[in-house]
Amino acid sequence: MKMTKMLTILVLAMALVAEVANADFTFGEPQDLGLGKGLYISVSADELELYFNSDRAGGLGNRDLWVSTRQSVDDPWGPPTNLHTVNSSYSEGFPCISRDGLTLYFCDYFYGPDRQGGLGEHDLWFSTRASRNDPWGAPVNMGTPFNTSGYEISPTLSHDELTFIFASARSGGHGNYDLWMCTRSSVQEAWGSPVNMGPRVNSSAHDYYGNLSPDGLVLFFESQRSGSYRAWMTMRRTVNDPWDPPVPLPEPMYSMAGVGRVSPDGSMLYSGMSQVPILPIVDLNGDGIVDGADLTIIVDHWGTDEPLCDIGPMPWGDGIVDVQDLIVLAEHLFEEIPRRNR
Image (tube, rainbow, N blue to C red; front, side, top):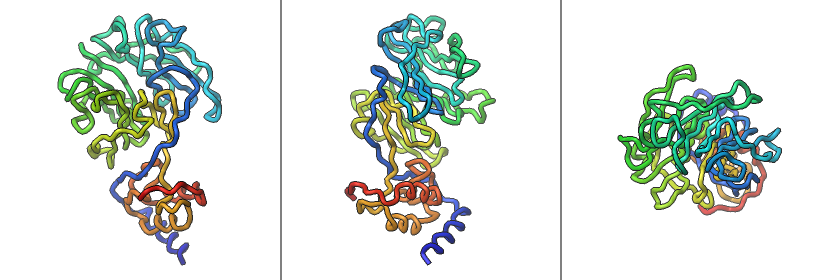
């Protein structure tokens, strides 16, 4: 009877529409990438290329852009290679690789003098290549309205390539560096004018390096609002809703510099020079094991937006308790999990 009830609800739920809500999730232990010193990493959509900036030996300037590659996601990262065709005698930083791997965004970094050919103090730039096997071309300044006579840094591109976020000290902000964004309706369209991300995200201090999750519901960024540069996070119920008040990431991510891209499936956060698993909370009743009792809780909340049960497909859920959540729970069935405080 229970299985029949579950299957009946499953069919009915396909037609249900619920408000989007944020599920409970947690972070695993950071895993060092084995690449040595560096900051502000960007990982390609297939997770086979990793870009970062570093002042290690062998560069052309104060800080340069480097890339490491691997054959599969199960292989270790290879020795970093300097991007000689992109770097200069100045400083380059904050790389962001596009989804197709053919455009690399970056900025002339705030360590050292400005790169020649820009519009202001620090500018946003990009480089392109014809294929993943071709070298990067000479950098091109992104021009207006992205750059001004002031400071622009930390460009990032959303997974769908329809939102471009960067930090700027231009007028109209709420503090020093603020997070701004441009949007477009398709990748063939031109970018709209930059819009300040507002006082819910920005503060009177430095706010920069904003990275959207693949579904656009979580924003990771860095801020100096607590007195020192730390990693923060804010969430929203739908892509059309306002952001929640930001919260600091737990230690040790809180003190890591450079909150990078989230993997396409939402299971990994690249932060500092480490990768940090993002884990759904699947022991729904907190009894230390994932079993039929947790399955019953999901069934009892089927078709709702209950955050406790909304654990898939991303760890923070998609706004409705449905088959996606059953799939995630099934992957963890009969796992023993340390009891948590409720």
